[in-house]
Length: 358
Image (cartoon, rainbow, N blue to C red; front, side, top):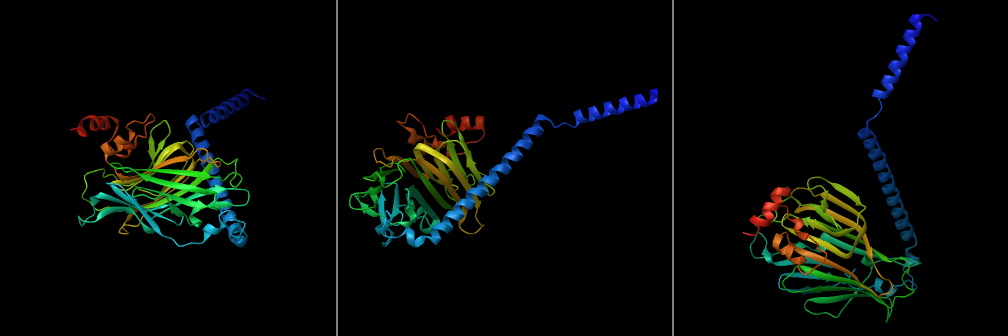
């Protein structure tokens, strides 16, 4: 082998090594590639979850007769007539459906609609839905399928009772207090030992609401509607305000808020929400609605009934001082005032300490 050939081979080898080194992906490219693979895995997992739910729904449909026979835990509660119970305080009025035991509408007394005489209603009718899922060895108990009975009713409180028999039931208790838009909500099992899965210390929740277009005329928060959530021990995050969006949140959440331009519907959990899936869809312009929101999550539930599940609703204005007042006397702050957009950090600080307090 002559000198020129050897030189050529060496040069070729150098070029190959150099090309391999230069074409090697950067750390950023490797991380981007990993995120891509992770997103594919998440999509596949989501598809698997949806397939499992579809198969379960089909199985329930095919076995509907078996699931509603006389041995079903809440068999008698499957039949009834839906009616509404109204409770109120000096600021708001809510109605609760006996079908599902859920809040069916929320009206704010101090805020008038465009006609200046009719109070603003955040949602009513089919605008909103809420479903709680409990479990035992035989069935999944979805509260939206059952009729509750209103007991212990006053002007500002009501307990919606789902009865298994004369002594065993699950209570949903709603309580309102003057001068606040906050509603106390507790879930408690009574004499349900052996009737609910003792090893499943969680209740799954499905919550959805269409955010109404509120006519202009208020000076409070005027940002586009968005689904906002508070990560436990941290700050807030949100889904896109201007596009369809969805997200699976791995962190524990203090609360989830469905916003329109001026008001919010917020669901809060003392024990936090887990395994959360959120969705926000744009509504058609001119439909009277801005967004179609939905959330799926879990929170702690004691099937023995020793400890109630403590939750809260806020149906009210995106007003900084009103939201800030909700943290008075609380060790762990909710920081619902983060629903009010005050700008970037420096601008937010100026607005928080000077503009708002003037």
